[in-house]
Image (cartoon, rainbow, N blue to C red; front, side, top):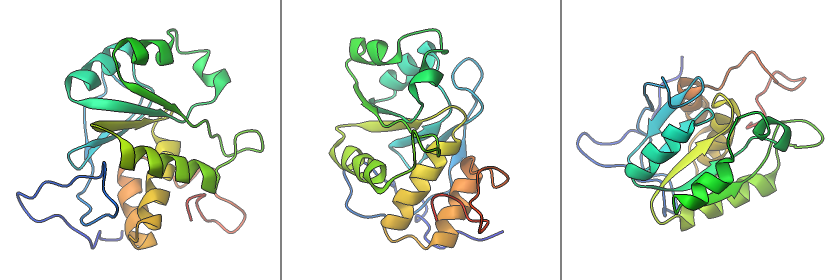
Amino acid sequence: PCAILIAARPGEAQKFVRQDSVRALPAPVLLETAGMFQDRYAKVGDDLFVAGQPTERALREMKAQGVTTIVNLRTPPEMARIGFDEEKLIAELGMKYVYLPVRGDSTFPYSPATLAKFTETLRAAEGKVLLHCTVAWRASHLWGAYLIQSGVPAADALAHTRAINLMDDHRMDSSGRQPIE
């Protein structure tokens, strides 16, 4: 296992929203998912959450915790199966909804444009941000790509995202590398 070399100082808050660079990379904290998120829910620093699909309850709780922006990576067919209108609920809660569907296939490929839009969203958000997909796998990919783009060494970014839900055994390319690499 790789150690994360960029570490926050004890007692020092780490912000990612509205920042131009990553100054410290605290270990993600995995939180309880029951009734809230599918599979994974991690807090990264003081103002970013990376998770699987949120429930209606989770979105209301995110609002109460100061989340102002929800970034959803799930595709339209996936969203048709969740049982509620996520975009509508987010609007009713007064939060911003950013839809960046990716699946890693030819219809919804990973792309530099997706990373650019996420970066723009993170830098412009007025409060905390929730980045989600189904089980936090694609969300961890996008977060890892953001870290690498921000100057975090690739090995450190990969170690960090593995702690969330990188899932090395899925969707590597023919060279055995993750899409974020």
